Amino acid sequence: MRLLTYLTYLSLFTIIISCQQSDKQIAEEIKDWQTPFEKGNGNQTATYNEVISFYENLAKSYSTINLEEIGITDSGSPLHLVSFSKSNIDWNSVNEDKIKILINNGIHPGESDGIDATMMLMRDLATGKLDAPDNLIFSAIAVYNVGGSLNRNSHTRTNQNGPEAYGFRGNARNYDLNRDFIKADSRNAQSFYQVYHKVNPDVFIDNHVSNGADYQYTLTHLFTQHNKLGKAAGNYLYNNLQKDLEQRLLDRDHPMTPYVNVYGVSPENGFSQFMDHPRYSTGYTTLWNTLGFMIETHMLKPYKDRVLGTQAIMEETIALGSQNMTRIKEARTASFKEFNNARFYVLNHINDKTKADTLLFKGYKAIRDVSEVTGQELLTYDRNQPFEKKTPYYNHFTATDSIKIPEFYVIPQGQWEVIELLRMNNIQMEVLPSDSTMTVTQYRIEDYDTDRNAYEGHYPHSKVRISKKDIQLRFRGSDIIIPTAQPGIRYILETLEPQGQDSFFKWNFFDTILQQKEGFSSYVFENTAKEMLTADAGLKKEFDSIKNANSKFAQSNYAQLKWLHDRSPNYEKAHLNYPIYKVHYND
Image 1 (cartoon, rainbow, N blue to C red):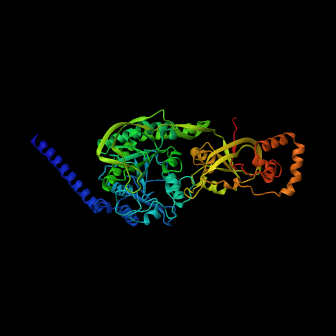
Image 2 (image 1 turned 180 degrees about the vertical axis):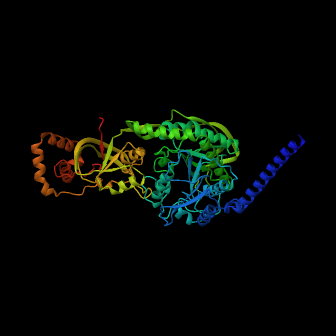
Image 3 (image 1 turned 45 degrees about the vertical axis):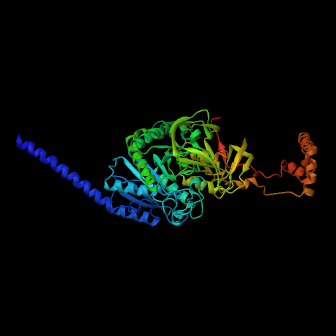
């Protein structure tokens, strides 16, 4: 009996020694793999070359780390996708036995918190410091905005407390890449498509730093708007993932609150959720029912606290994702099914001020002082007067428009730019085998507004008003048929419906239809105009009515003749007629 007891104690002692040696070995490995952030004073971020070198060496040393070059960016360099998994990753598989999490870093390189946090997290997963679940594929774009990262300085982040030097917001062509996920003017966005559809993430995180008001939190989150995400995925995001993540961070003494979406006013009286349209990263990933959110650390908090807080959020997302993998995948699957079975699709949303969640918000007293520079009112915050109060958070949105989902869209092959973007997004399409006549629904652009100022390389349209009619139209062989019954249904509808918040029409892809290509000479068209009025009493009545009601029209020879020309057989068919067509079989 004594021998048995002795052997038991000896076995336990051996296990303890082994564990101590393992912990010591891990600690030594961590020391060997310290990042530039850790080696500094807590206020430095790695350069682009340091980031890539770190991951190249990590991948060489640990079989659980995989590093890939994907596509190309406007800077001429590829994107680097780094992934951790305990088992070999087969990207040709759907990997439905794994929770797939994708991180995007450095979309705004001055907001570098996620770059440093992800380096440490990947290292901790590889060395075993962080016990990784077996069902995890954790992937990250090392630095998304390569050109902006290489444009390193220490002055452009006017409102930000560190790091000492960082990259610039604009990319190599001065695009803000977090407005480019639909229009895809940048090679970065086109390469992101490859990354996203390769990974097909269940959860997506884009790491940022906030701007705006001052408050007590280091960490805020901007979850994709749950009503817009919709269906089962939206419900799970709102009722489970967000609330569980907030609680887990609170348990780690990292309290966080929703992104404080205010400008020029204090948040203490309430604020609304930021609406992430498809132009933004999380708005784009929503189109495939991915549960997405942005981490927004507070600009004025110490850089070290922001980086460690970002790492903590990603760690807890890994834990929640692993533990709830089945529920998350079921929610995504149900959403795909619900959208494909739907007859109508909502396009636009407005904030519903009749509904609000209540936050126990930790802020600072707002002070309205007089600016010593301008002599005008200046809003500041007094950190010596912290408060905690119940604050309304308006995070519910209501749809304002909907369309009936067609069975197909028909795209003439001449719209090759749009077709290519659809292909990049894995949209299934068919080629019309021969010339065919079809009954289709055609939109006409009746009215729209256009921004007077340039916005990310465009002058976007808004307040688009359309009419529609069914016509018979002859299509050529090799024109493109896009069935809506497919995983990319939401991308198809959001981009091809001209009234969509980020439609291709909004982003000027079809501006050629807004300009007439042919004109007329007044003296040549005069006789035809007179014959039209003589032959059509209704037309003459309408013409005379406008002349009587509009003195400017009545005094303009050209305006009157143009009005008649636009109603003549000479009027060109392409003008204002939207060149994408819909086919409905179940009307």
